[in-house]
Structure formats: C-alpha cells, structure tokens
Length: 156
Image 1 (cartoon, rainbow, N blue to C red):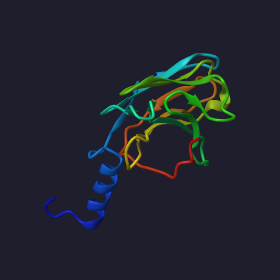
Image 2: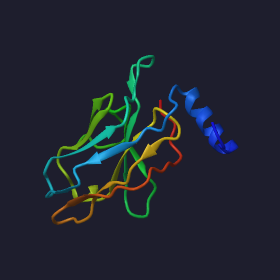
Image 3: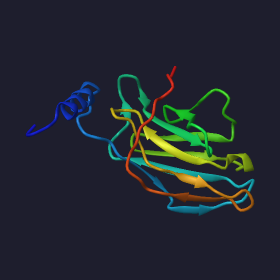
C-alpha cells in the first residue's frame, strides 16, 4: 500500500467491500452528433469492466439528464429500467460493458446534458456529457472530463 493516506485506504477498502478493487471508468460516444427535433438519437457508453452482477442479475449502469441550472435527474437505472415519470421516448439498453441511451424522437425540452454512470463500485463515476445545446438544430457535444460523483436517489 506504500504511503497511502487513511482516506485512500478507506476508499480502497470500501471499493473492495463491493467486490471491486479498482476504479471503473466510463466513456461516452460519439464525440459529436447533430440532430433535429423528431429524430432518433443513440448515445453509447462503455465501461472499463463489466457492470453486471451475477447475484442480482442486474447491470449497474444509470443514465441521467441535467438541464441548465438543475440537479441531475435519473432517467434509466439498471441499464434499461425507466425511472418513474420519464417519457417513453427514453430507453436504455446494453449489458456488461456496452450500453446505450436512445431518445426515439428528440423534443425541444430534451435540451440537456446526458450522463452515463456506473454504480457497480464506489465511487460511482460519470463522464461529462453529451449536451443538447440548440433547440432549432439540436447539437449534441461530448466533453470528456474527470470522473465525478453526486448523491444518488435510492433505487427500488
């Protein structure tokens, strides 16, 4: 462990308690995508290791939407389960390391940042984000940043 601080050791201990002793990274693609209202779009997310838990038989991948000035809103959990109140045009798919968020018919109110987040290990990590930035010709831009975390709502 070398010269690890108590905080680093505690973080490693917590991660190992969850069965994972290494940070999981997630990356999203494409790097950019221009769409119009009514079009179907798919955002991909790849994890550095499997997010599938064989005991629970679930994939621990969440999708969030964050509108300007608002907190992130959970859209999809367990890779494909739609959160309460989320419009049917938002669907999640995938398993293990490869996942996707599809918006079947983009609407103007979908202007937001979209994040995939692994919840398999601690700390939960996301990368910043595909962003829909214009309401006439919607443009999604992906900005890679350092992983960050935020408080999660309790999942069923």
